[in-house]
Length: 130
Image (cartoon, rainbow, N blue to C red; front, top):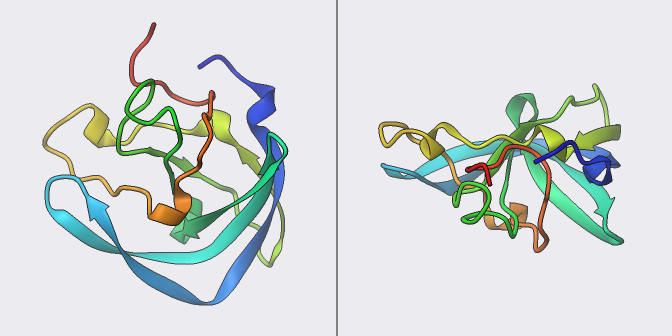
């Protein structure tokens, strides 16, 4: 997509007291355990959303473009995490398709159900150019 300032927002990041592990679906080999270290809460298009965030800021996101303009298994973004709970910038223009979008020989994690956004994120990398 073209750079879209509507999909740059400020959020609030909160670390979990203890990282939580969750089994998520994975392309090729079924399921994988992944760790989430915190969550980011933000407002977009007048609604409040929360995403679980993994180690090093790795965040898996699915939205209503998944399977159409972007990879059906969702997209990824790395967030620049604060050292302690606090404000964070969320720039969805940095979303990218995972390696599975380009090769059948890779294993990619799918976003957990709590990271499925019920809106179109018209920002970041598309699967195909129109």
